[in-house]
Image (cartoon, rainbow, N blue to C red):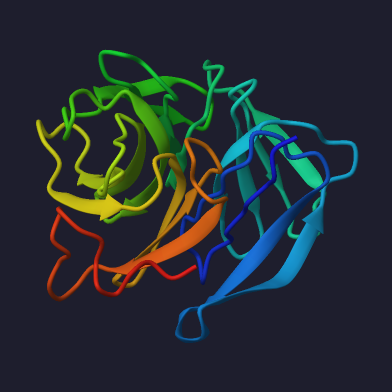
Length: 237
């Protein structure tokens, strides 16, 4: 069974996780960047639940969990009590952004370019977009997404590469023909992504020779790293 990795938000923001299996609990990580430390500050039990929760959004009183098996969105209180679930019409959820009255849901993989769907709270499809072409070809394998105003950041687990940059995160306004920002990442299989201020947090899986699953951060303001070598402020683990 793969390890579960959940990042809950700082305030009422969308944060993401990278589990395939989520049988018993959600864990919150507090990231102390200056100390290069990850401190477990809370866990939320979900007894009897065995779902493929992937996308996540948290607000002051509710946790919204996107199931990558059934495609349903579950919602619970902060004690782990399931309050209900909503069908979306899909059987995947590789990232979720909750908006007033609707959800953005990322498709997991399509060779010619994965899709982003918007469904309302009743499961009615409102919009469909294809993720844009990126470095290496189509946006085939979507790791996760998070909101940044009217744009989304998303990670790519395919295409990936054998040398740095191993993969990328992209900022994209749904419907635009191309991303509006690009950030090189370590690890060939980045999944979870979250934004706090000028910093992206992302999680890589222990696949393709990566050392394990890491939580990484990268400043977005100031000079960007060169794409032909790792950044001097290398991602903190």
